[in-house]
Image (tube, rainbow over all chains, first blue to last red; front, side, top):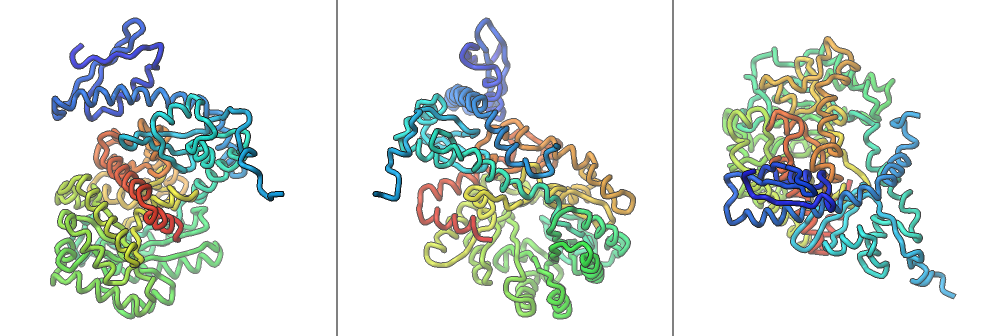
Length: 99
Length: 486
């Protein structure tokens, strides 16, 4: 693969977390994904208007974003039943929810 | 014995807590921005955020108390949090089942102005074929009363709406007659450039409780540059018109809207001063939209979102300083956003709603009977793109029009809780979906968030408002006042 290679451990991060993080940088770089053993291998191809000296900044930021995405997954998983309960409760007296 | 429980009473005895649904984003180098489903927010450092999610936050920490107070977590002392969140969520979405309240009647496409940014196709003032007929008006009024909304606001637009004043009178009187049976809260607004307003028209407006909305872009030279007309006297006419409206209708019955052009960008203070000079209580800082003549004349492309944001921030900062010096003046775009940030209510601003406000909040009946889910989509149709055309009052029923794929598809596709990046964005409770904007820019209803001008503009506004109020208690108080002012 061409581009800057960044790897993540599949035992630590989900593929979704890495994909979501990559999407956020879609205006900075495109990403090729591959699974190699226990690793998610990302090849980042930067758009031409990104200065060479900014590339490392975006790579670091991408890694931090994957970490944030991992945190978001934990929050979502823990709070999902409560979210459904709150919304059901909120709309329980309206005609929007079918009986 | 004290009437109050000691602090120890509020300690979390079980030492465990449950997370409630919330989102976060990196706000700056030090802080993360957290928001919950009802729009409450907090700023927290990354280390504390990590400990919060890993259940390692101690109940003696200030951040724990703040998070608990805003129902980001539930422990054994605030089990009522679930009920509170449900009540706030219900309040926030209370407009949704009301459905369409704003009904725009495009009574004529004719206009005496030729504004470079005008969002509609203008026709010369002598072509009667671009006027709404009574037959079309009758059908459109019937559509309006089919909406379940308790509040029906009929807004007359153009072209220049007063070029077809007889149909306005017809619609007002027929709607009022029908409302004797329907019993809605019925309001009327005429959007006009005021060039042909006179005492007779205003006497009629006073008799029927009609509000006037006009355009004022700033000082005389800027206004006349943006809004050319024969005689080059648009400013003179609008100033005289505002004065006459106030004399006949009362001070609060006329409002004005500005549009930012490239020529406005360096003149924020002057524009605000113009509104102040004329005694308006506030201003809506509005950017250009990528529709109609704004695209054809390239005026939309004349400046970038970043430049508009600089203009917005500079003008808002000036307004804040005016307030600090004792001059009460409001910025309405900020007030709408602040209402979503600082209260449980949603003012229902069409551009900042999800599901999108198109069709649900506003509907447009064009002069020829065609129905469009927003003024912007009507403008696309005037340019020959009928993607959003929902039908025609002459040939289609209300049910056919509102179940049209031209409405349902963009509503479904653009729902922010399903759009990549929006679904996890901590600003989502304040933001909205604008499928017409995205379609105009990208020919799909979503676009890519990192490349979206709408996203960039909205995020820029949200961030600036939060930065200003978090850094300055005066601004926080001022913004609380704006958020709660109706």
